[in-house]
Amino acid sequence: MPTKPKIAVFKFTGCAGCQMEFLRLADEYPDILGKVELSYFKMAKRDNVAGPYDISLIEGSISCPRELEEIKEIRKHSNVLVALGDCAVNGCLPSIKNWIPQSENERRVYEDTSVVQSFALHGLSEYVKVDAHVSGCPPDKNLMLGLLVKSLQQLRVYHRPHAVCVECKLRENVCLLTALKQPCMGPVTKGGCNALCPSGARVCEGCYGPMSDANAQSLANAFKECGLADDDIMRKFRKYAGLTSEFSKEASKI
Image 1 (cartoon, rainbow, N blue to C red):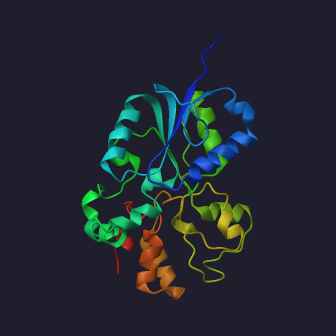
Image 2 (cartoon, rainbow, N blue to C red; image 1 turned 120 degrees about the vertical axis):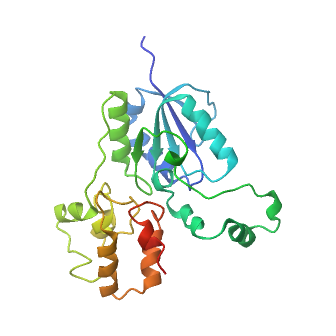
Image 3 (cartoon, one colour; image 1 turned 30 degrees about the horizontal axis):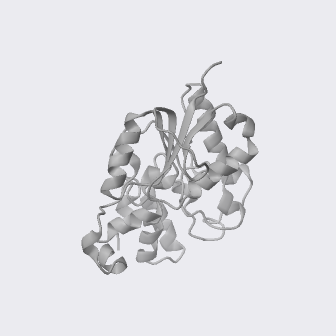
């Protein structure tokens, strides 16, 4: 009998939302997961085994020496390593701490900072080779499904380069930015969510990270026309992917 591919799921600095979405995937597509061996997934199972693994899905960013040591060890024992979700890809919400001195962060949270071992937070590719990135907070479960299927078939994983605006047009949504003058991040944010927030009459917050060739400065100017102050615009770009080269300039303006 052929050996089933071994899948592992790990969590670092993050909220566990990506793992929860992966569990929903398991509920909806049990036939797919029945074709693999879920070797390591502490949130979902008691008995977990050491690698090697065919595919390791990593949720969360790296923020302390222990996590750095662990991700390097996982990389050594993984054929394919996947950054699962925006924390693992770009740093996401936890990366906001990087805009404040580490010592100040520690003083705000801990009475005794001498026991804290932490450093500036970054996505996985800062420290190890990442074979595939699945953006989102959390990623849409169908993106996870596509990645699993293509990885198991040893096919190239397709990364959506287009903006959320494309998905809004496909759903025939009224443009929140141009028509309603609301500060929507859709023009510079990578698609993949099927325009979830704008379809519910809420502005895109940018949780999938920057699209290809994102023009952050132009959108920042549009936000000023919407009535946003400079510090509010800065926070919009800093929120999910402020550490990226595409957003960092606008994220650093005050």
